[in-house]
Image (cartoon, rainbow, N blue to C red):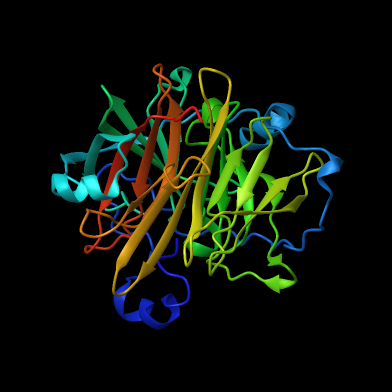
Amino acid sequence: MRLSVVLTALFAASLIPACAAPQDAGAGAAPVIETVPKRPEVSRSVPEVSARDGLWRASDHAETLIAASCPAGTRRQQPLPIDLAVTPVSLGQPDQIARQLPETVSISGAWELSSSNSNLGGLSGLALLPASQGGGLLTVSDAGAFVWIDLENGAPTAAKIAYMQGSDGAQLTGKAEGDAEGLVWSDGLALVSFERAFRIEAFALSACGSAARAARVATLPDKHDNRNIDENQGPEAIFLTPEGALGFGYEGMLSISPLGQVNANGTAAWTGERASAPALYGLVARETVTLPDGSHRAVEMFRAWDPIRGNRIRLTWGKSDADSLTLSRPLLVDNFEGLAAEPLQNGAIRVWIVSDNNFSGSQRTLLYAFDITISQS
């Protein structure tokens, strides 16, 4: 989670509250583990491995990861239901919306989510669950939790929560362990990227539910172009390529958002590519959508912030300016970080985005759904 690029250091202390999970969990919250065994630190030095060495695919590693995440004898646990208030919201006045949304984009739904349970918040990653998992949305919180959001007729209706466990079965605690940012669902596994300690972990939610433990997929680089990467500029985005390989993208700074991949041997490497971030924006989410005609579209979300203009969000789904939209004031916009996309039968793409409220009373958890008509050019 990061609200600004360079200006954060100057303004965060006075403008942005700390992003820790509330300690008063309230009714229905996951139990708090008071003592957590210290996990040994792992090295984050990752060699630059050529893409020609092979690519990591969940289908090749699912059996091993499920066995590690859901050891034999583990009892499957269900996440805990929490109350969810769903309030429809308007992005703005019709003329304001028309100025910022292209004609190819329509609003399928827009809601503010809230709960009497103070653990709902900090939503940073987003994925659509398959029908075999009940459908709906799965999100991750940068306080180290999974949050399930049920959908009915294309609208959110209910929520459940579970805090993540480390490989030792102890609850992840603090930002150093639990700063979850990116999310991909594949082969019964929730693949989660983390900032602070840059890594991707797999959780066998299909097999073990909320009893799933973290199983390491890859340790991610902490340097780019021989420069150290700030712990808050790391792997906001993870995604699957059209070939099923696992990629990652760093938010970076000053419009430099490098892309990398996980190799078949479990190492991670930069590909030499960068997400096409607008000036002063950073990549926070990316997903590749397969359309009914078999073609693919990469949908990316970039974020910028400063204390004068506030949050600005850029969505892109093609190479031309027409294949993009920007959300900024006076529209209702917040700190959007999570993105999920799905093809519709009419050839359009439905894009879901969710905002991280930083557990702050001055911010909102917003969930938007846009339907985007894809040009054939």
